[in-house]
Image 1 (cartoon, helix red, strand yellow):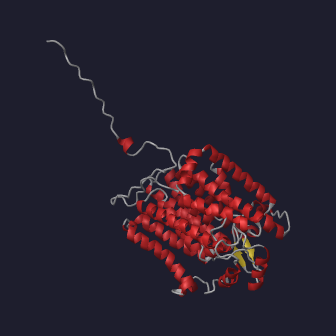
Image 2: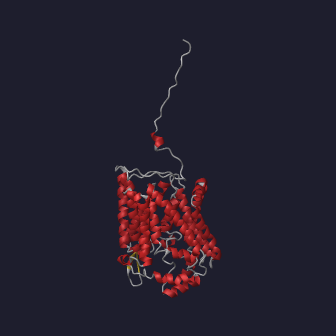
Image 3: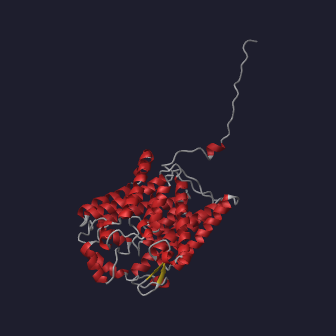
Length: 450
């Protein structure tokens, strides 16, 4: 039952706030942006409190996970302290409190008695809701699944709020469906195994269709890059060689980075249907970066796009917005160079863990690697290191999973995924212990006398 708490949280993060589903505004636009919707605040606070109660009962396992994830604690601690120098300290603190909810939900999943099954249920329950519902809304309920620009140009949104959000949601849950499709394929094709294979295949097809039709170039490229590495590490043992895998990961990051920021391979950007200004993003960056008052510490957690700065940037680029459309620049605007350094430590930790997990094919190893690639690449053109963003939540989950003593996959069974126990999970009998033979030794009787 506890797993339904993070399921509810992730569903809201992957779709819309409850107030948007109910068309409840609650206040004027200005106050709603600063204070948040009261209905959403009440519901999210209630979900968060339930999750905290669950973690209190799992005290020892929670402490074990937190000790193993010091970089996450450092980053969020700095975010919490930064409200002190924010122009809007009350708004900054409330947003940090909500951001902590992402960490709490990840902890609820990873401190489960079987974290792998809990993670699988989380991704499948939410994915099996948001992906088919998006297709249903777009096809049959356009007032819920489509949006129109001021010029009347339609775009697909599905259960999300815009086409980019639909694209990245489809990419993330599509990758999860792809991984579990491989897992089901390796199992005997009888009974539930065949049904699961069919179900994951349907979700994968719908996800790819939504990716293509939503016209989100960033999400589509992230899906292709992350999915390619996942397939490579799942199917080919040579791809799990340390040197080859490190080079492949570097290529999936450096190729989009060089095409977008260094001008090398800019034709790739144009082939994806985008211009070299990335739909006006460069103008946003040029206006926003010089407005940071203190480059070392930034303007405070989630505080840059407030007040006079927001009005000045809107006049500068002649349009309304509330993010930099680049996750790294977004962190710099709010948290300065210190925030970027802590984020870099977080990403380096993630890189080391997910590459090792993919090489050794521990449980969810290839999936964690795919989520890492998506998070790094997606933030080149969108702000994904933000509270209640599914990209951020999936990255935190990929970092926090600490497998125990991973064992490389034998060469004669390249598709076989090895089970590994977690530091947070209980020890269970299995494997060698289950195959041990019990030898009964009879006592030897010695006769006395003659």
